[in-house]
Amino acid sequence: MAWSYRRRVKIIPGVHLNFSKSGISTSIGVRGASLTLGKNGAYLNTGIPGTGLSYRQKLFNSDEPSFPSVPVDVYEEEGNENIVSADVQEITSQDMQGIKETIIAAHNQRIDLKNDLAKIKTSIFISRLSLVSSYIFIYGLIKKEIKDTIVATIKKKKATYLEVKEHFENCYVRLDIDFEPEIEQQYLNVVECFKKLSTSHKIWDVVSAHYQDRVAARSSASTLVRKREVKFGIKSIPDIKSKYESLWLGNANGADLYFYPNFIVMYASSKRFAVIGLDELYFSHSYVRFTETGIVPRDSNVIDWTWTKVNKNGAPDKRFKDNRQIPVVKYGEITLRTDTGLHEEYEFSNYEYTAAFGQAFGKYQNTIKDIGVMKF
Image 1 (cartoon, helix red, strand yellow):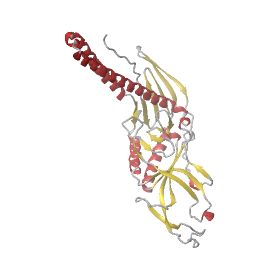
Image 2 (cartoon, one colour):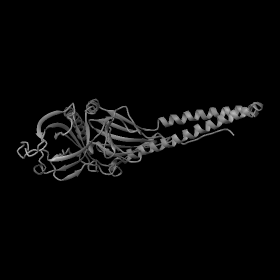
Image 3 (cartoon, rainbow, N blue to C red):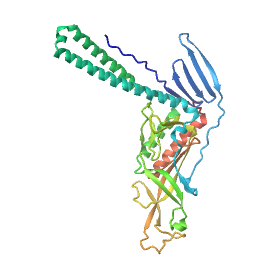
Image 4 (cartoon, one colour):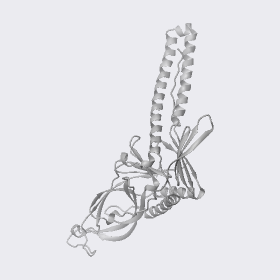
């Protein structure tokens, strides 16, 4: 019997973003239809296959105001605060479900294709054993058509393997972006500033901040923070590909963050992730005076000095015999929040890089808000 293999491969729709001064539109392309969202509302564009006809239906208006930028400084708050985002399964923006479902579809199909590749590879191996056996037991030499049939089957399986492998390698969400030159330059500037920020000698994820009584603790610090070192870099989740680089922010106590031109993916795993509209983000950057009891990072600036044990007036508490002088360092700080439950704070040893990135990102985000963004 001739060998045959058939799998119905679904075409993964791409996500198309169009950035212009008149507005930002986002569409997910599927066969015969696409969902387009722009400054003035959402439209369903549907084509009738084979007729060349199509129609456009308005779904809803855009009456939602853009979110204001609200700086948050946890170091001025009293009490205890664990700085951690809500469960990643709960914070996807309702209007971003379309992108999330597309990512899931791409991932699930890639798993299926990977399993198919393994099965075909095993089948090729078995066919090769059959060919060898035909020679060992001579019947392949006596009946040449047996050998020819096995050889032809192996050839077909190899061709199928290459075809499935090609589908596997192209099974991802293609993020296509049309930028107006001015907006594109703003995003490229964000990426370049982020690359510099990621070279900071130390990057910390602040996981908690606790108020302390300075007088009772004999300390110059009003807040005790717990933080863990993390990494930043240029990286994308496996299910999305684009010619534009995305920003990766490591997370010490939750899902990592991936910044794309119009949305954020908070990614714990292929089954646990959230998609958040970039315009929903409350973003702020500033600096903190940090009483450093450890080694001062090589790219940090010491802006003051204090003592391990200090009086209310700033003088050293002489009751402590081994009271030593310690530096106060200027660190950069970035705060990320959304109404859906994202809450992350980072500190950086290089304040200058923090300020440059904060200014570049703030300008880009304000541009997006000014021209108007609608989401899925």
